[in-house]
Image (cartoon, rainbow, N blue to C red; front, side, top):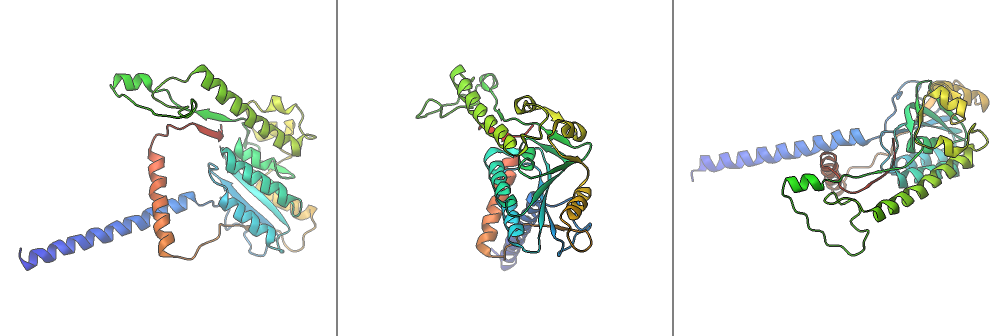
Length: 306
C-alpha cells in the first residue's frame, strides 16, 4: 500500500471520527433543549431580584428531579417570598407527579405556592396545581381530565398474519401483562382495573385534601376524565381565578404587600460543570431518549394524562 493511500485512509478515518463527535454533541445539545423545562415568558418581566419565583412545569411529566430541585432552590432563597408554578402540561407518569405534589404541599406550609395554568393543565398537570393554595387559569385553559389511564395493544392477529411467533417464559402469572402477542385475560383486566381504581382514589383524595371546601360538586363527579375550559373550571371550583400568569403575579404581589416594583423571577434547572464522564453518560442518555421516542413501547403505560 502506498504512503499516499495510507494517508488518505487515515484522513478519512479522522474526518469520520470528528463528524461522529460533532453529531453526538449536536444531538446532545438538541435533546437537552427539548427536555429542559423553559418558560414561555422567559425574559419578559424577568428579574433576578424579584420576590416572586416562577417554576415552569411543561410537557409530559416523566421525571421529578428538575422541578423538585427548582422548588428546593426557591425554598432556600430568602429573597423569594412566594412561588408560582407555571403549569402547561397534559400530565404524565404517576410517581413523579406525586413526588412533585408532596414537595409542593410541604414547602407551601413555609412559603406560599400558587399555580398559573397555561394552554393545558390536565390530569397530572392539574394534580400538581391542586397542591397549591390558589390557582389561576386562562379562560381557554384546558383543565381537569382527572383520571388514570393504562394503554396497551393486542397485536396477536397481526403477528399471526405476519407468521411471527413469540415465545414468553415467565415466573408469576401476571408477569407478562400487556404482552402484545396475546389477548388480555379477564383476570388480568380485573387486576389492572383494581390497580387503576386505587390510584384514581389517591388522585381524588389528594385534590380533596386541598380543595374540598371549594369544589361545587362531589369530587367523584368531577373526576371522570372530563376536560373543562377556564371559566367552567372556576364555576366548578377546580380553579380559583380566571387570569394570566402576570395577573396572578400582580395579585400575589399586592396581597402579600411586597416591596418594590412588580416583577417575576424565572427559575431554571441548575447547570452542571462539564466533565467527560458526565458528558459520556449524557450522550448515552440522549441516544436512549431518541431510541425510546422512535420505538413502539409494549409495556403498559401507567399515566396521569388525557
